[in-house]
Length: 112
Length: 117
Image: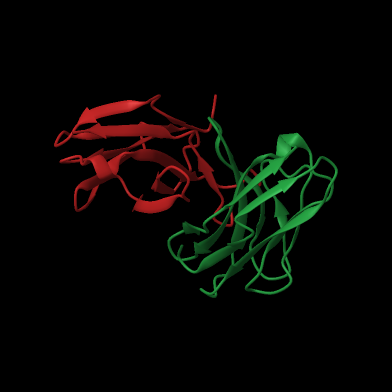
């Protein structure tokens, strides 16, 4: 998966619980992204980080927070999980020169 | 109107045929266009990128871009059962503020392709 790792691979939460999804890259790219994928909805951008120390909202940021503490890692936090956040979450990195994005293996999250 | 729309599927073609996948986008200033392939339970895999009008060929895959008509297509020649997957069209749409889009992509909903022997 193009040097992008995500943990965990699977997670089941109860409504109201919190958790952090981790993403790490070994490609030394500046830009990193968090997407969610739901049936029939395609991929939707939650948050992105253009460079270390900066983050910005995407299309569906409500209920999430992110942290980009260093160039390698970009984490996504659910403070109080809701069933509507049941989804597959993908982290991606961008090759700047061509705008190409490469995805990690994903985290399948179920909120009961 | 959705920003990026793909032809509704699922699409079923026989082995050896040409599969044609289409995508239209709404923003005329879009500059970068991508096709991803996603197998069931896996992450999207970039298979083609195209930036200028015309055709771009890579093996059995050809991407076609027409900016005037705002569409991009993917042709898969000599389709194989291993091509059976969901194909996602993605477009880099610049931000409304006119600043850099930071490479943000907008995805279509995907087209499921099945190649039957």
